[in-house]
Length: 330
Image 1 (cartoon, rainbow, N blue to C red):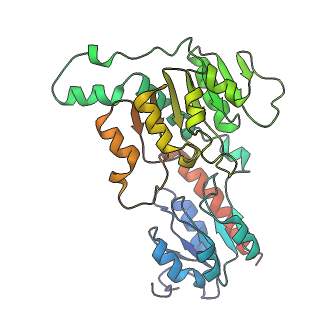
Image 2 (cartoon, rainbow, N blue to C red):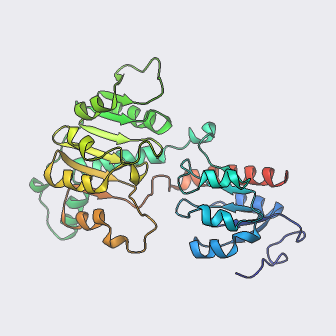
Image 3 (cartoon, helix red, strand yellow):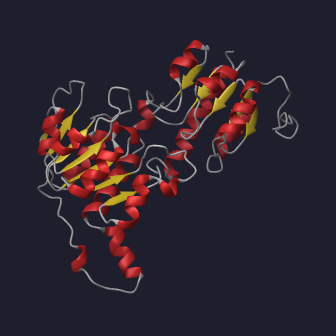
């Protein structure tokens, strides 16, 4: 990558702080205008190789979820003071290495006012659930092939079934509210004390949640403590015929154990928006993708939980404001 052309970028001078952005701002022109009026911005499509080659030139890095700001990247970032990510999860950033390198990390995790306006991931969790229990992808494929038959696609009614929500934060609360609209009793499991809960919502321990829920939806951040939380033992505790939904992070589930449970029970189905190794080039050979090609009880979407038009301007604008304000202090 050549050094940025300050004139082309519209910069007032070449003494501006330099920001590398691998975020697409095509749907957030006002946020982009704000950044480029205060900073020297270099835009690039996501590329781990390019990041390693060029990060030493920049004061800030605006990163999408799929890019790894690991110890190797940070060791090369001689002038970097900020890593910003428009996500709530930060497992793509080595936080310990960043702290050791004197680098500040911005995410959306603590931006409660903004996040409470964004329901997209919770809505997708419900979309995945309906797709699995009503067998929608396979019914649609059948119609597209010219058939019109309902008997092979008999699904399940959700009313009266128990919804288990793991993690009762922002997204977990949204999903629980949607569940009540479907007349489902709600069980929640959260390590933080929740105090008074809405009528129809009960807090239980993790194993109780697994044993009693007809549907379990995962809404916790990935930590070392909950990596592979849904291992073979946990999955075997689930009710026969249960459905598992994951819009959090792939590594919370042991994917080998998940496949066995889908083949042999107790799970009747699963819907996932996240899988392990999302940055691999041969996604078609991922074990979950290979399984889904020939089975009708697994729905996979390509991490689109937050990918809706409405939140883009909100998130991009807030992130641009924070980046500009921070850069003015260094």
